[in-house]
Structure formats: C-alpha cells, structure tokens
Image (cartoon, rainbow, N blue to C red; front, side):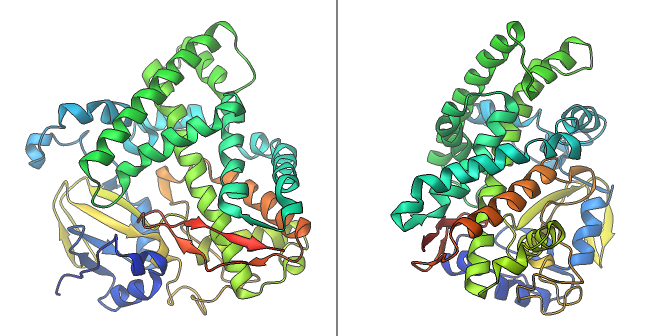
Length: 402
C-alpha cells in the first residue's frame, strides 16, 4: 500500500479535514501517513479498541531506553519543558499513572463537578452581559475562551485575575504539540514553562500555609498525608489541568456554535430538556471534535489489522475520522441532534480517557443553551476560519451578530 501524503499544516486541510479522512479510509483500516511517519487508524471501532489496548501506551521509556529505541538525548535547552512533561498524567503509564489519576479523579467525580453548574451559568451570563448590547462579537475571545480558563482557575484556587497570564503560558506550551514546530516555538514554550512553573511553585508554597477548599490545597494535603505525590508532580498536574482543561473546551464551544448555526439547528428543540441538551452536546462533539489525533507507542512487538509493529513504533488514532465513520454512523457528515446511534471518541478512551471530560461536558451543557437563549437572533457575521494548528481543531475567530 503506498504511503498517504497530506501536510498537516496545509490550510485547506485544516479548514475541512473530513474529505481527506474519507480518502484515508479508502485505504483500509490503517494508512501510513508519510508526513508523520507512522501508521494511522481511521475507523470508530479500531480507534476505540486501540485506545483501550494494553499493548499500547502514551509513554514508552518505562519499558525501553532511548538508546534501545535509537532516540537522541533531549537537547539541554528543551529539558525544562520535558522535565515537566515527565510527571504528566498524559505521559505516564501504570503504576505511576494510576497513583496520580486516583488523586486527581476526586476533583472530577460527577458530584464535585455538578457543584460548579451555578458558577458556570453565572459566568456565561456575565460574559454575555458585556457584549449583548453591541450586536456583534467574536465568540471565541468573548465567550468560548474565558469560560473554561476561569472555571479551571477557580477549581485550582488560582485568582481569576491571573487567567490571561495562565492562558498565555498555556498557549505557548501546547504549541510544542503542533506539527513541524520551529526552534523559535520550542524556545518560547520553554520560557512559558519556566514562567508557569515558577508561578505554580510560589502559589503551592503559599497554599501550604494558607490552605483553602480548592484542588491545589487538596493535593498538598494528599502529599503531606503520604499519598506519594511529590511537589514536582503536583505542579505538573496543575499545569496539565489548565492546559488540557481549557484548550479542548474552547474549541468544542466554538465548533459547536458554528455547527449549529451552519446547520440551521433549532436551539429550542436542541436544549428543550436536560436529556436533549446532553444528546446535543454529544452530537456536537462527534460532528466536529476539538482534537483530531492521539498517538500511542507499541509497548511490545505486535500486529494490528495486518500492520506489523515493533516495540517503540508510534501509531496515530484519528479521532476526527473515527467520529465520522460511515460504518458506525448513519449520515456521518450531517449534524443530527437527535441521533439514536450517538457516540464519540472525542475524549479518548481507556486509562487515558480525559479526566476533565465531565467538567467539559457540563460547561458545554450550560454555556450553549445560555448563549442561544440570551441571543435568539444569533447568526454568522463572517465565514468562520479554523486555526492552522493540527492536531488541534478549533476556530481562530467566530464572528457573529444578533
């Protein structure tokens, strides 16, 4: 089978990757994406199964050395970034991952998340109050971005006044995950990492003497109670929760509003009941996912769908393609808010299923109905444009009027 060529940074691909995914799918369950240099899987069932498959992991260095894998050493200038990454839930496997996740999960159980509903509703209404009288807005900047970053800051116990600075550090750090990053992007990410770590370290020190009812205080208490959470792990966990906790939700809100407006969806029906609202949110997440690619390493020599893999080989799981799989969904390229075959892999699956998924879902279930109720004449004021930042899939702007 010939390699598949599609530059991830190509503007047209970023605006609408779905026809390309259909072309990939025509190659079979797996396609070798030459630009990345690894095999990718596009189907809903294979992607879901591989996300749960214990032969694959987010990390590999717990079972193989860099020398064994033929990897060069991390350059000295990038070590501050990767030193933080080394303690991340996203980059660890059991038993380290299990220990960290067990501690963090306590903040994201349904009961704890549901308590945030009034705060999210008040925040959404407050933001709309600020621009309702203007008649037009960029919803990404004015609505989609502030909600998740302020909610995560509240959860961590960090002052909301820090939101803009946290957001700046976060954007610069996650740029490290873009395809074909440059040395300038790397240097900027390292600088942001150092600034973020310095702030979190000082804030953790402050919370040690003045604990509150927030996640940082609870994690400090766990650390001091001997639940094996180091200060470096605590700082990385807080940074991860902010970075991962806002990026996908910003994109999900923007992509969801765009999808509803372009489809001419009826908000009154879409959000008529809590059950309808939940189903609408799941379909929006399926239709235009905020993240399109997760990667895994083969932890052993193995074979998947006829593809032989050696220990250390990387594979790509195309969430955006899986969510539009015609073998799983009727009319996969249509927004159908009352689907009876609804499902999605937008938050992943298996042990690395997004720990913040309950919070992200709640933010969408509160913010979207509030927006459409408050601005009943909402319509697009300009063609929406996605940022060229694959594998993230989110809008640069969403200009609307009412």
